[in-house]
Image (cartoon, rainbow, N blue to C red; front, top):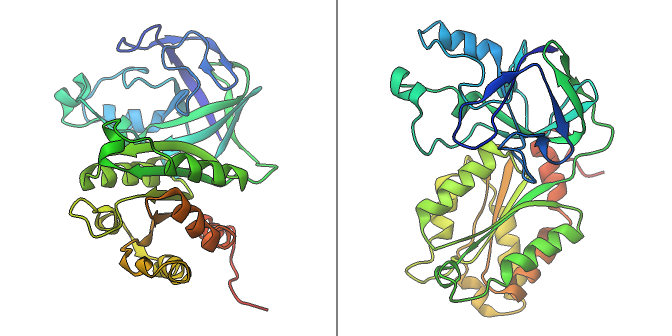
Length: 311
């Protein structure tokens, strides 16, 4: 589907990437000798040559590697592909893990042009199968032979936890429960009860990482700092109230205080977001309510399930 026209690496972070004729891609690491390789989800960065050419037509005059990308491929619109896409290039198999990136400080390209394409057009991948990629190699979309596991993130909201004054027990318990159910928990975050922080992370995880599920814990009560529901609703594309209602209904059988929960459940893009209470016990009771049911919902969001009718 495309052709590799440049391979770029740099020995240290913050230094300009330079073009090389070939490179070895190590499994679950990245390009051997590249500063951005490592045991994380952004092992290899890719950018469409067509996007660079269009940007240069505006007078940018950039060369491959200027955006910090590892692979420049002609004939592929990476931005249009979903996270989880498998890319085969010779022996190397890559899996896309993120679309776009946050720009924390404007680069020289942005200062010159007032724009930079990497934050919205660049994508990232991890190396599943190792090998050598050379300039001129063809890259194709590979067929997935086994279903991709559900991918999830867990976010704990706690002022004391974020300050290190309280151990987070709920987040790890939720993550362990998800893993036992076959989920791939790709991120666990501990944040202060700040709505802006939660909104930022929900948007990043839903839009850039395109996760199937995000579970939050904490901040759903009546306290003045309990703002998790408001932050969640602020990023929602659609409401999914039935899940939160079912949790409250089941919890009312355990304690009448369940009526004080303000937790919500929503959809952003293809990501389901569910608020859970703050205590580990209540989190487990809440997950008992929905864990067996939501794979159908996530399958609908992925486009893998078409029929909801009961037979």
